[in-house]
Length: 282
Image 1 (tube, rainbow, N blue to C red):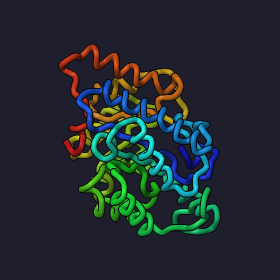
Image 2: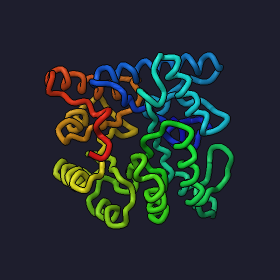
Image 3: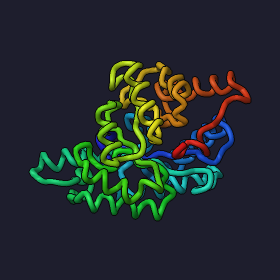
């Protein structure tokens, strides 16, 4: 964790893993849990903080934002999994925060407000993500550009949209009207789904349906402030999203969702389909 969700010097909000290379949910979850605990050991051995941010992710001070990816790679190897074969990377930089901080400083662009204080243009942000995608097995970037930077979104979609998942969270806010604009302007190729953001189940289902009918992926999501309610786990299965974003396997507010998914998978038995290898551009 970094950004507004952690008290460290990392500008970007979430660095996550995607356990792609598994045949079922419980094996994928096990890999995630083991890598999480391996990461704690890696951080401890490097004398880095193992305190956690809002979503349960570790929140140490680092020499650069990119160091977070290097630590994930090291933890994956330590846990005995294959980086770029079984385990891939998902990012949520939450760059609207960088955009807003630049505006507060009287500048236009993306302010690295917790580290270098550099201000990057939209083109530079697109190049940053493209460069990282060449160096690391990144398969998903959420909010890689700010919610008001529609031109930037069009650029990153043109450059990376056929290679990786580009998720609109702040861009779409689970709202059909904004998603319709994204479809029209070819911005992003996936939507983050937050039920209590749009406010009703019917509007949630409408947004997911519109996305899927237009070959946009949908990712069911928690919020930074959570409870032990596990409804989104049921909704992820009910809507056939194939993906859920619900934080690190840390604290009951995050683990409740994973435990519910385990119960659902057990109940479905052989009918359960793990989304790891099948979700991309269904």
